[in-house]
Image 1 (cartoon, rainbow, N blue to C red):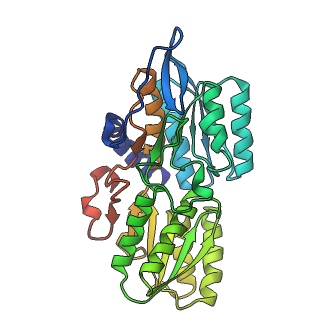
Image 2 (spheres, one colour; image 1 turned 120 degrees about the vertical axis):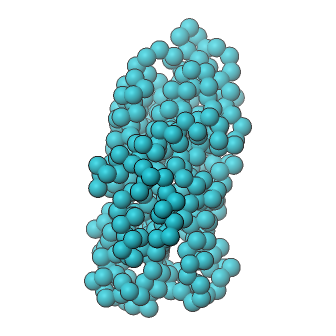
Image 3 (cartoon, rainbow, N blue to C red; image 1 turned 90 degrees about the vertical axis):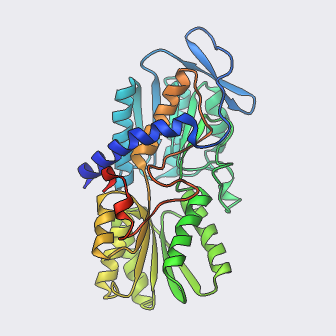
Length: 365
């Protein structure tokens, strides 16, 4: 599965990155500003701060990801290695094992080491790492591109950020789509449209402190407030198939009247959800709407195990992060928000069903 998806994401990613970095995101660009000291370019990161980025080859880049325990993380890892090699970067990958405290320590150690010129970060806890990434990294002259997980106020303002304000000053940009409120609203709207009337809903999400989880919960609260036919329960997972299976199985034993499951990540969570439904003898009764990418997702749509999906692009996301840093080296700091979507947009995610699979680019099918 990983090999098939890898080819698809690599082929699709190259075109989408070029489009995104050309300014398709629609935000005000981050102007590079004045020339820095010899051999550097001064990058304006907001908050009256600039980072003097080295312009020579062999840029040392730290890449911080949540973990490689699932397919999303494996695609991030592969993209980081392949893209860094293509761009001539000296890349070091930090795997946090889905531990926010471990990731924070990794970032603090990398910053104080003085070994890195730039960083790509998917923050496990955007509140806890806010000051470090929006102030301390810039003061340490590290240019930071944020990947798919908004920073700072999501812990207190759980409404979620739109694509227009997801960028955090102090960083180069934000690359992503699915953790913005626009995207989550689009996913839930598609599920609601496909499932009218009374629905007993189970949302299978990631960790409770995860930004995507917080934003999804806020969007679901609005959904249930606007549509009293929907009753929603939530379970939290560690993003793995085993955890999703165990917790979904337990839930369904006590709630056999469940009619709709919202799975926040395919293939990993969705694999567990599908198997739990089958083991409970409820698979013909329950519809599944998920968020994901790749061959598994399409197979499950065709088999009727999944009703609809919206897409994730982990390879393209990481490629865009690193490519934006390379562009900044050349004096083009680009847009503050870079949409990683290969098809659809963050504001209007493409909904994949049996009927719309044929509309996907050939490299994604």
